[in-house]
Length: 78
Image (cartoon, rainbow, N blue to C red; front, side, top):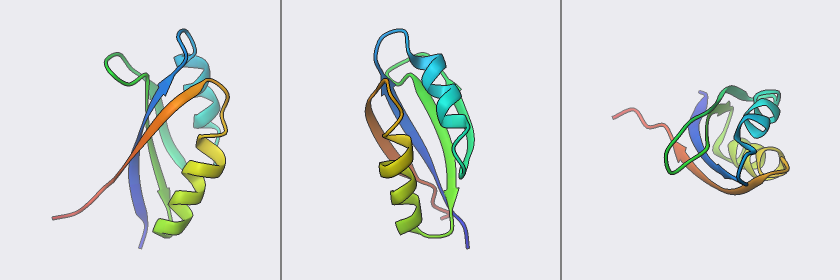
């Protein structure tokens, strides 16, 4: 079973497009788009487990320069 999540990203001013491009190149990321509103980039990611998803967010996504904050929202099927 695949675990999916949306990752809401805030960036430094003027860095949204650069951050979205860098995140989009990370394995496990299926979509990364710069947007307007309270968040600057919205990412869709998937992994084989919750632990792997956590590693993706902490070790890879949050390591991208220009990110100030992330919020991870796991997808649930109710």
